Image 1 (tube, rainbow, N blue to C red):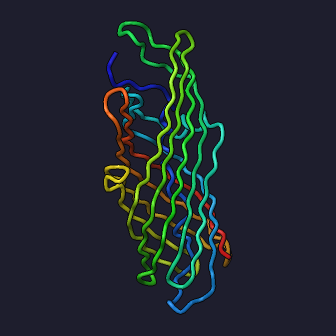
Image 2 (image 1 turned 180 degrees about the vertical axis):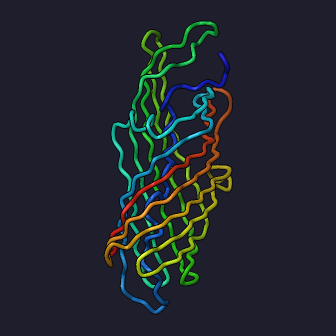
Image 3 (image 1 turned 60 degrees about the vertical axis):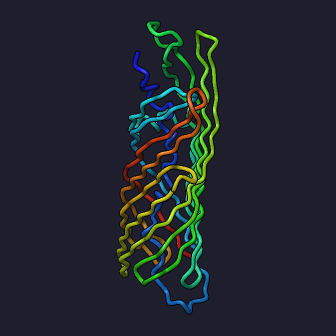
Length: 260
């Protein structure tokens, strides 16, 4: 059996979770106000991402290929929660984005001795992403953003027919900088966000881009959607202690933003 094997639908598939540092209706942010504005503005935006994941993961030195779509992920989802909150005052703003996923599945594990059949096993995974962002309005149509993204992955497995089990928990922090461009109007609003981070502080590199479009139903409700692409390359340790997460996560999303 090849060293690189697909451990099963979800396995670390949803190691992804980094899935959603921002898959919300972000372009639906309120229209720009001048620097003299003093009123606080709040945006609360639940969202729903339909992710595809392709890449490589290594746990305890064992390499695994990941290639899964939305249906495989949602079939194994035990619990999920995601959302976005933003507060602005004048040219400055602060945002908090979070995503948590708890998944479980039956899968096949590479046998300890080559030539034996794969081992059946139960896999569990919990993935958390928590992003803190500072926003500075540079132009009526452009925001400069910077912050940190905290990623946490916990995974465990237990074989059915062999005394083989394991677990791991890994947390890393990626600083990032970027820009958000907006084209607001009375009814429609479009935008795109681009950011880059990691800088070897956590991931060696993390890159994100996603265009969005929204429709203002009322002054305080906007419905939106778009497409998001996130690339992350993180690794730590050597040989049997090696953990690696090199993944592209992409897909459409839908969301609603409520402005106060």
